[in-house]
Length: 180
Figure 1: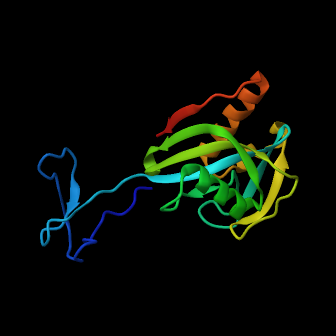
Figure 2 (figure 1 turned 60 degrees about the vertical axis):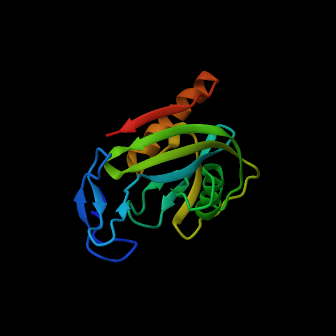
Figure 3 (figure 1 turned 30 degrees about the vertical axis):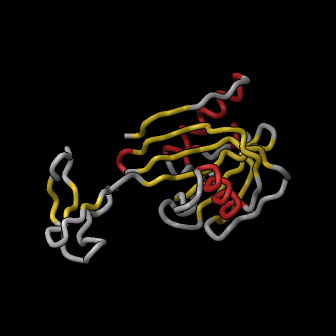
């Protein structure tokens, strides 16, 4: 799941070499022609847990990876947007739904994929949703009806397990965990 290494300099286009720059502790893509150092950083994934009463809204993926499996509305954060703004955008794009955010719920470090997920709790502002271009269908599920074996990602499954446990306990907390 690791991204392929950087091969060319973004500043001048020359082939890069990997070495530990002076004052650093990790190998980096360094351009021997112009000296530019390119850093590889995790990608941010932002999304929501859209709730309607005791149910959550899930999307069935119309894209790879994991085509046809269920997920929470989420995707890559864009340059120039906040985590909250990106989560709202992804929910509109994938689920055709509007939510009122009620706080950060989970920060998940997906180490093999070099990703960090930010899931926000949200209440649907109206009982309206529709599949966007990246979704085959969008449906509300009670905890007992979640297609657990058909969830696209461990991050989503573990977030939903924690969400429903918090819902049963009558209090929500922020969860931070790693998926190795």
